[in-house]
Length: 154
Image (cartoon, rainbow, N blue to C red; front, side, top):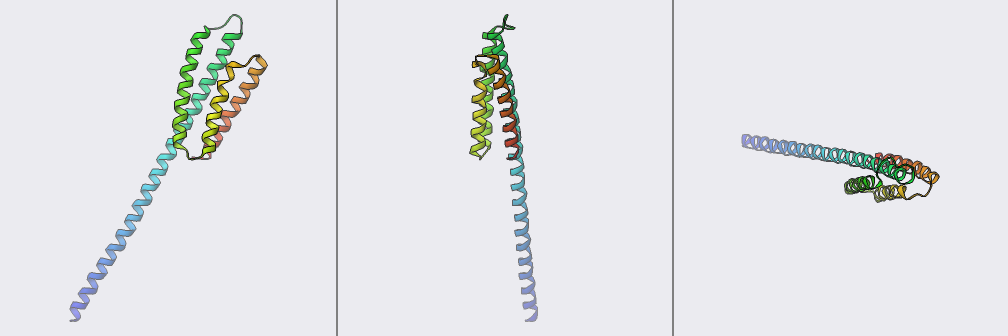
């Protein structure tokens, strides 16, 4: 009888040990999966906001060039050609904006990203060189602020 009780205790101990080991392994696997997911999301956010900042810089540069094509004599390039390039760059900026917005949960950051694009779009509509220079500084600073804000969410 003692042998049967000892065997039963041994079997229960083995089962309990296996169950605890399984629970710890499952917990470790869940933590590893969660860490991997968070790291992938962080990397995707980094890529999305980096691409968006680059698209904004290119779009901004093209609009400044467009302004000079329309207002300087003689124009350094055909304004219609530059305008078409600006449309393409704006489309690219919008696409990267949508990707960045889908990857962030922060509505304030999402709205700030949208506002920077809208502010840059007004660059080519400025009437004077002074207004253009002010808008260039403002939009450059806006992009820098956006990058710093996005960095906080990585």
